[in-house]
Each structure stands twice: as structure tokens, then as C-alpha cells.
Amino acid sequence: MKYLIVANWKMNPASRKEATALWKNISAESAKNTEVVICPPYPFLSLKKDLKDKKLILGAQDVSADVSGAHTGEVSASMLADTGVKYVIIGHSDRRAKGDTNEVVNKKILCALKAGLKPIVCIGENTRDDHGFYLHFIKTQIDECFRGVSKAQLQDITIAYEPIWSISTNPNAKEDTPSDSLEMSIFILKTMSDIFSTSAAKDVRIIYGGSVNEKNAESFLLHGGVSGALVGRASLDAKKFIKIINSAK
Image 1 (cartoon, rainbow, N blue to C red):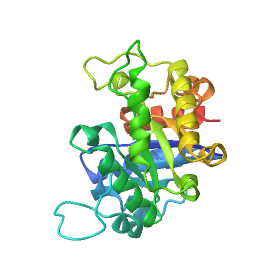
Image 2: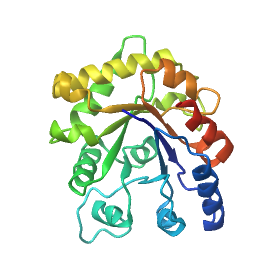
Image 3: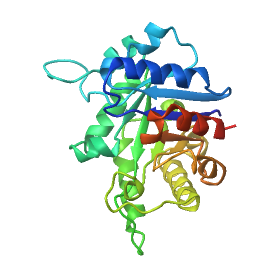
């Protein structure tokens, strides 16, 4: 299974000119034997086609929970697929903070799979406690988000473990460690095994989605029990992001 390094540009950069330059710089240095996915804002999804880029994979930051209809401002899974999108981030903490419940995330996953997209499903706790209640929180997220997903569909799913308490934009952020990531990766795999089966759960790729940067990426990839990373702020700096990509070697 190849490493998966995903750039979540969020609502950046400010212009198409900047987005084009960033894309070109990343593409020029992308590593072999690693899947590198760029998830730009919707207005920049056409960059891959316009630049005729064969190295980078196109991803989207979100998708509608509805197939079609009167949903102003929404973008459907079939629209994304038609644009050339292969992966889509679902359930990111930014979206959950704006109201995406586990039920909504579940609907988005099913829509994405039906359209042939590969969901990158974000799960993660807001805080950690000494009694292990955060494990129950993660289990509930998995139980509710993956309802209706078949064993066969797991091969197209990536889980991004996103410890919200460690994200740098959180004012009370605390540093996460590869051992924390390893613990959760084992727990996620165990939970998926209980729901589906051990053999089916092994098809799910788990990546780390905390505050990944060029300094800690290699440590998480080596010791965190993950097969990649979901990168936020550091993906907006080509040099930093390329170091993260190269750490997957």
C-alpha cells in the first residue's frame, strides 16, 4: 500500500495565480511511489486539467450529502467526479464545527462512494481524558459514520485520525506524539475489525491528520502506525510540503 500525502489548502490561496504557482512547485518535486493529493478550494479544481498535470491527484475538501436537487451552494459527488476529482475529504473538524454530524458524514460517504470517489474520512476527539472516554467517542464516530458501507467499499476508504486538541489553530493546542497516533491507529483498526472483519479492516488506509509539518512528519510515518498524512497549513508552503512528501520515502 502506497503512502498517501494529502494537502488540504482550506480557503487558500487568495488568487488563482498563487494557486497555480503553488501547484506547479509541488508537482515538480513530488516523490515517486507516493500518492500526493491536492485538495484546493472549489474555484481551483480545474488546475490539474489546465496544467495537464499527471503527477498530482485531485481531491476536494467536501461534498454534498445530497445527490441532486434544490440545494443552493452545494456541490454533488457526481459533479466532483465529472471535474476529475478522485479523493474527497469528509467530516473534517472544520466542517463538523459548522454542523456536520456523524449522520451527515455518513450520507456524504455513501454519496461519494456511489459516484466513484474515494472518501478521506476524518475522525478525532476534541479532548483526552484520564478515563478513556475519548475512545468511546471515536468508536461512536466510526459506528455512525460507516453505517451502510460494505466490506468491498473499504478498499476505497481512508481514515484520517484528526486529534482536534493538537491542531495548531486551536488556541489550547497541545503537542501530539507518534505514540498517541499509534494507540489510536490500533484502536481504529480494532473497531473497524469488530464492525466488518479483520481481513476487511486491513483494506482501510489510516493517515494522520493532526498538526503535521516538515519537522514531525517522518516521525509520525515511522512510529505513528499510519500510512500517510493529511496536511493543512504546511501544504501552503511548497518547500515544507515537499519535505513532508519526501519523508514518505
